[in-house]
Image (cartoon, rainbow, N blue to C red; front, top):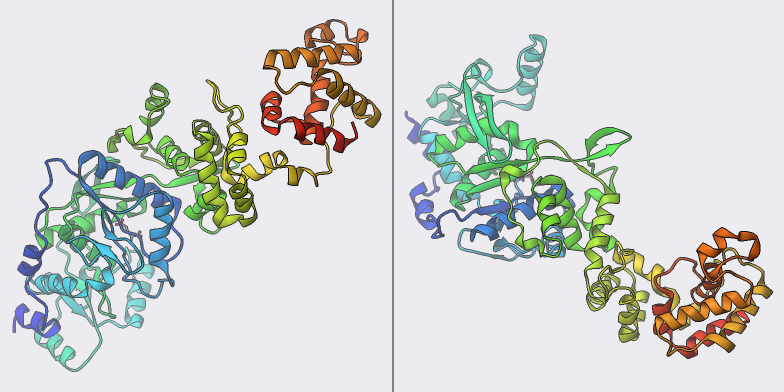
Length: 549
Ligand code: GLU
C-alpha cells in the first residue's frame, strides 16, 4: 500500500496538476504589474471593509498596468444567500468598480483563468488535493463530530491549545490499508492537510502593509476538503491565487493570523506565495470606545447604504483613502482639483491599526466633492438616484430639466462654490421651494425677527412697487434693499445698527430676510439675488401676492 493508491481511491478521476499548470500559465504582463482580486463570499451585503479592499485592489492593479479579478468564494453553501453574487456585482458597480476579469453578473464571467466561482472549481481542488495525498501531505480523517468534541474537551481540561494537531490528530498516522478499507466500506471522511510545522519554531513574514511579523509555525492539520467535497477557504484560496496568478492578496486583517498556515500550504503545493497585504479594520468610535463597524448595529457598514443615501462614489472613495492612507491627505492638499485616479497608492503608507470611520467627516468630504461638480452633473446624478429611490422627485426633475439645472447652479459658478449639499437625498428638501407647483402648497414660513404679518406685507408691497426690477445687477439690487430698509426705519448697514441700535427698528438683514422668507419660506438659503434671477419676475410677484403683500 502506498500514498498513490490512497490518492487513486479517493480521486480516481482527478487530472494531473500539470494539466492545470499549463492551462493557466504565468501571465504575460509587464514587470511589476499587480494582479489583485476581491474574493467575497456571497453571504449577505458587501461590507464597507470589502469595498475598501476592492478600491485598493483596483487602484493597485490600475496604477501598475495589472488587472483586478472578482472571484466568488462560495464553498460554504450553507451560508450562501439567494442572489448573493448579483448583490456583490451590483454593489461594486454602484461604485464604478467593474472587474477586469472574473465575475461580471450573477452567471457571467470574463477571462481565461476561470471558472471564477469556487463551487465550479471542484475538480481543480481535487487535483491539487490528490497531489498532496500522493506526497503524504494530506490524509483522510474519519473522526465524527462527537469524537472531535471529545478531543476538544480533553484539551480544555488539560488547558492546552485546542485543535487537531500532533498527538491529537487521530488519523494523521493511521495505517494506509486501514484507511483504504474504511473508504471502500463507505465510511464518511474529510481530507486534512498533514502539517510539517512545529509550534516552537518561528517564521518571519513581511506583510506589505503591516511590515515584518513573526509567528509560530502552523502545526494544525486543517481540513482541506470537507465532507460535501468542497474545499475550505484556506485550501481554495491558495490554489486559486496560484492558478489565477495573483500577485497581491489584499484582505482584511482578521486573516493575518492564518499567514503561517497559508504560507505552509503554498510551500507544500510547491507554489510561490503572493505578497500579502492586510488592511486595517474599519472601526467606529462610540463614546470614546473603538469598536468594529458592525453589520448588525451600523447601517453604514453596508455599502448599499451609501448608494441609497446618494452619497457620491467619489466622496466615499476619497474618504476611505483619507482614513486609511497617510499619504492621501497631503496629496489632496497639494492637488485640490486633481482626479482621485491620479493619486498613487503605496501599500506601505496604509494605516496599520484600525481606521476610525466618522460619518460626519464623510459628509464633509462629500460636500467638498459635490461643490466641485457642475449643475449638470449634479442633475444627472440626482436623477439617477431619484429614479431608484424617489420616483416622484425623478419626475419633477425630468419635467423641469433646464430649470432644475439653473437651481443647482446657484452659487456654483464661482471661485468658492456652495458647499451645502452632502448627498442626493438632501436635494429635494433643499430646493423644492424653487418649483412653483410645490411652493404653492407650502405653508410654514420661517420669518425671523419681523413676524408681524401687516409689517411684512407692507415691506413686501413697497419692495415690489418701488424697488424691484428683475434686470438690476447685484449691486443695484442690494442698494435698493438698503433704500427700502432706510425708508422703513431700518439701518442700511449692520455696522451702523450695531453702533446705535436705539436709532433703528433693525437693519437691512432683517428686511432682506423678509423678502427671502416670503420667496422661499426659508430663512437660510443660498444667495437671494441668484434665487430671484432663477425664479424670474412673474414668479416673484406671484409669491409675494401669495403671502398677501
Ligand atoms: N472569502 C474570504 C472572505 O470573504 C476572502 C478572504 C480573502 O480575500 O482571501 O473573507
